[in-house]
Length: 373
Ligand SMILES: Cc1ncc(COP(=O)(O)O)c(C=O)c1O
Image 1 (cartoon, rainbow, N blue to C red):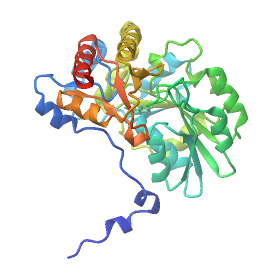
Image 2 (image 1 turned 60 degrees about the horizontal axis):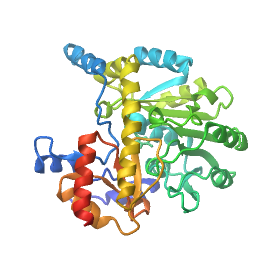
Image 3 (image 1 turned 120 degrees about the vertical axis):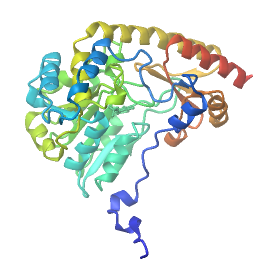
């Protein structure tokens, strides 16, 4: 029997879609560089690992792996509610924040809707919009200047919002540019958009922020019912492998989103580890300060080598080599150093480098010296 034309069978938005590019085949590379020899600085994971309390919580749930997880995630939601000082009804858990970013578009952006995000914004926003069949509108980023990163231009984003717009995605700080905007600027932006335009503020990297001008947008939820804040345990909490994220929004909005949530979307180990991790502020503080110190050190070392490094409030830096970085990246991979190429974002001269622990960073710099010489 001939196979049907699956492409033609897919709905229009999906036909135009290209799958998210996760970078290199990391498993194949680990096989090539066994025994932990691979230096993995391509996915913005935490080199400092999870809280020991989270590790303990995972091993404590081994005896109940035959049971389904709590479909409501009540314990984690209650811990998050206390931590964020919000009503638990404002919270929704996701299989990573990626799932929540997709669900928001699935629920609130149909085929006639417009979805606006910034140029050089996180790649998932365009995928989420297109998968929902919505029209994706890319607002220009701040112009290229001596301040290298092309950050969100909130005025341009506001100008791109039109009568069709139902959803706006902002990342603060943003991946891959590592740029950010102040909480005051966000509040001004939120005042300028219609109240029926939903605004997602993706705070995947918020725990790494050291600037006093940027605090979580969760504090703005009472003022702006159209605001949805997403956060994750994948980055500073070091739990990327467990897939736990959450959204915080108006309770009525959460209730609508809940209609499409798969009931067991976060597994038992993830729920337990995230709850335990929230209780370990000592670990999180140590990750935050170690990352900040290492971020400054690495950025300076890269600048000493002639690269342009944008400021960062995240656990990665965007590095502009001012020439096509494809060959540099390929040579580094051959030496067992994984970074993230940026050509897919139209930033072919740039590489995104996760801030590693000192040993990893030294190996990266050593390999880079060989490649650049
Ligand atoms: C800006 C941003 N948002 C969201 C995510 C998704 O993270 P997760 O699904 O692991 O929570 C990432 C992952 O890299 C990211 O960079």
